[in-house]
Length: 246
Image (cartoon, rainbow, N blue to C red):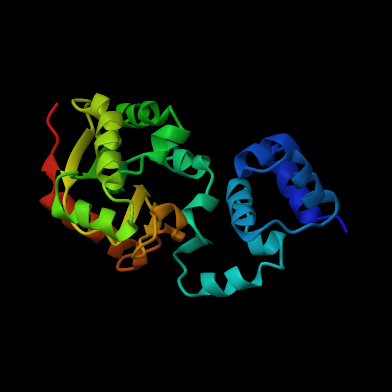
C-alpha cells in the first residue's frame, strides 16, 4: 500500500522523486516504489533519505526495527551506518555546508572527500568567509603511527601515499583566514567529521580499511554526552599536531 506519510513529507518539502533520489543516492524509480508501493529501502538509504526530509526514518518505514533499538542506546545517536561506503558524499558535503561556527576534521587522509566532491575546498572557504573556524588534522605520512596503520590495513605504504595526497588537496587552503591545517602522528581509533553540533564518527577496526568500518551520526544535546567525548578527543589530538606551513 502507498506510504502516505512519505508522500506528505516530500510534498511539504517540495521534493520530487528525482531530487530525493539524487540526495539519497538511488534511482528515481526506487523512490517511486517507496511512495506508491510502500517498499522499504535498505537501512542506510532509509536513514539518509529521512535525514534529508527532516523525518524519523522509523516513522516513515516501521520495518526498520533494528535501528530503532540502536537509537535508543543514546539520544545523541541520529543514524547508524554499517560502513562508511553506505554514505553518499552529500552526507559529508551537506554537513560542512550547514556549519555556522566551526568545522573539525580528524583523519589520516580521507582523500575520498576531494575525489568524490571536487568542490570540497570551495565549501570550506565559503564557510570560513562566513565566520566558521575550520581545523583540519591529517596524518603525518612519516610518523610511526601512520606507518603502523598501513601495516595493519595490509595496504603497505598505501596510507602514507594517501596522507601525502591529502596534503596536496588541502595545501591551497593554507593561509586562508579561519582555516588551519595540521599534521598528527597519533593512533586514531576513529575518524571525526564535525560541523557545529553534529558529527560523523567513522570507527576504525584492526586490519580493515575505514570505508568498510561503521559510521554513526551524532547530534549534541547537552554537556558530557557521547558527542563531547569525541569532541574532547579531537581537541587532545589538535594540541599535539604540527601546523602545516605554506
